[in-house]
Image (cartoon, rainbow, N blue to C red; front, side, top):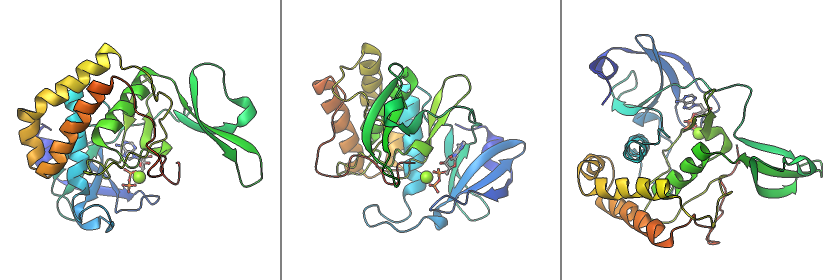
Length: 255
Ligand SMILES: Nc1ncnc2c1ncn2[C@@H]1O[C@H](COP(=O)(O)OP(=O)(O)O)[C@@H](O)[C@H]1O
Ligand SMILES: [Mg+2]
């Protein structure tokens, strides 16, 4: 739980993140910098029920907590200048590093990176979409499978100076239907490590206890059952899934 101050002290808006499709603000609570997305500012979507994105963001944080991998920055629901919304701790990224990149196809590094796609850019040049091959990013990829993330773009991955990789923008998660759209396909078919299996088990066990109770305030019972089923499927498959072919496997735009 956030400290009482973060729950109740005044949230002051300091800016708006203009690239964002929803109403996404920068603000402060005391001297803590936060992102604030009021429910009232959520754009209607054809496939997700209106007014539920902030709840999904908090639900994603709770799953990240159950995993114990610190994928999602601290996220909670609270009141703000435009009413109830999600608030998330701001994380200052390393400006010199991108965990996902688009590079000329003949410059893909031989080690340390995974290639996801190859294609031509507007000028006809062959380019490759690559992401780093790091344990932190691999855990995020597995987290995305569990929460059924429909929008893991490059810009939703924050590269921290200490090597941690945080995921943000988890409004399009936990749909009952398969919606996984991600740029992190580099580990498809790889066997899960025991650390990854243990993480999945913590979520499955949590769903029968405290995590399940907390999620019941945020998601429908069908969505929670689908989460449990995805965890069970991952454990029985024992490996990272591949794109299913029924739908686009990557988000658009990619960043
Ligand atoms: N907690 C955070 N810390 C640092 N940067 C963030 C954080 N949340 C979002 N951002 C930055 O702001 C951008 C827009 O936020 P995002 O959550 O994607 O909003 P929207 O739902 O409107 O698309 C992100 O791509 C990311 O670069
Ligand atoms: Mg976004």
